[in-house]
Image 1 (cartoon, rainbow, N blue to C red):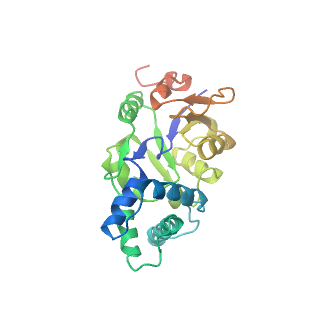
Image 2 (image 1 turned 120 degrees about the horizontal axis):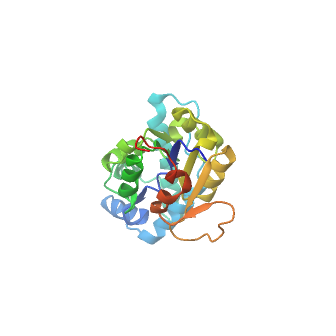
Image 3 (image 1 turned 45 degrees about the horizontal axis):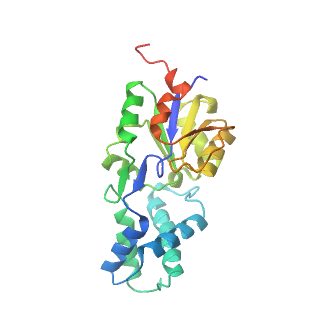
Length: 245
C-alpha cells in the first residue's frame, strides 16, 4: 500500500468542545436573559444538528459565504431553542445567536484531544503530508491557528467552502486534487462511520475508524483505532519512505 497523504477529520478526531455544547449555550443564554438547562439544550442541539441539511453551499461566491454559514447555524440554533420552549422570535435572540457564533470562532471553547500534538509531531517528523477533510465552516481555519496545529497540514478542506459535505464523494475528490494524488494513495481517519468511513471507502481511500468510545467491535472490514496514537503503528504509516530511509 503506497500511501502518500493522510487526511483527518476535525471535530471528534482532532478537536472537541470544552465541556459540552449545552454548557456553552446555557452560559451564553443566561447573559441574554434566558435560563435553560444545559443537558436539555445539549440534547436539543444534537437533534437539530443531525436534522439539518448538509453544511455546504454549492456555487456560493466567496463574499457571500460567511452569511450563508451564519444563516445555516441560525436555523440550527433556532430549532434547538424552540425544541426546549424558547421563543426564537424574541428580540433578544439575534444578539444571543451572534454571541454563540463568536464563542466557537477560536480556541475559547475548543481544545485538542490529548494525543493530537504528539501524533502530528511524529507524522511531521516522518515527513508525512497531512490534510483535514471536515464538515465545518470557515471558522475551522482560525480554530486550527489558535490551537497551533495549522502548520502541520498542507490542506484544510471544509465542506461549506467546497460546496459538498461528507459522505458526498466530491469533498474527498477535492481534497485529493489539492495533493495531486489518487484515492488509493490516501488514508482518511475519522470518527463518523457514515461520513468518514463509508464516504472515504466509496471513493477508494483507505479508511481508519477512530472509535474513542469503543462502540464498535467488528474489525472484519476496516481498521479501528481507539486513539490517534495507534495510527502511528498502521502498516502504511510505518512503511512510508522518509528522506532518512
